[in-house]
Length: 134
Length: 195
Image 1: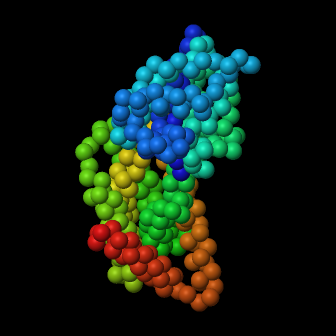
Image 2: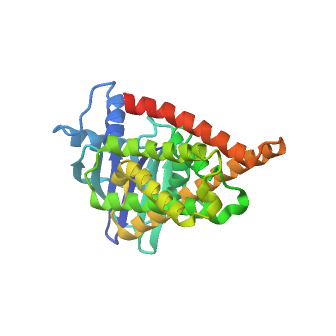
């Protein structure tokens, strides 16, 4: 099973978001999206490549309004990369998460959400990439 | 109701056909037991789960510098030991006849720790930083492992019952399963240690 994880802390004014992906999985996916170009995320262009990929695969709505994913930080480690983001406002959020689904059929993106009413868990899969957070 | 993601992960961590080590380990561990010995095999499985989960949690928290090859080789060694023991005692390890609850628990915990250390590197980087979510993840993961192991146990007991209906004694069944597991383990070991 291939995994990635999202950790979202929902606040009244903004929701802090951390996505963690295995480095080799993400490099594979970005490389494939670039037509096979070798990708090394520890290089200077790694951050922008990773952020661009995440933006292309992750969409967030509140109702019918598409929300902007603000990229706040990027941490590279040989095992995994961490991308810190935020969206304005709190719940509800409708997330369509297709991260790495095009590469791995068994990809599961796990959500840990700490909201005003407690914790929520959810999973995005290739067959069901949509997550409703309320 | 959705299955908690980490319960699913724990469940498929055991029942992943691509990762034979856990399947074989559980099969070899319970080979000498009958369903009525549930205190023994359930105790051993639970001890394994606790060791596995505690080791993963500890390694994720402490980041001990471990030699990956050594840890993975040790996983294989636990498999060889467990299967080898069943074969050595011809399907009826002495300890099982004496009620070896204590030593068996210790062995299961130790082996759980080794298996947990091997998997920590695969899961650790993705775990949440929020302590509540982290504890919940570990709890569900352990529950998923336990449930996965119980499925393996159920499958072994079904085959055991079928073998018994065709005249196999429990001892012969255990010896056959132990020998099969040992053979596969030796094959895996030859690939691992000699390469």
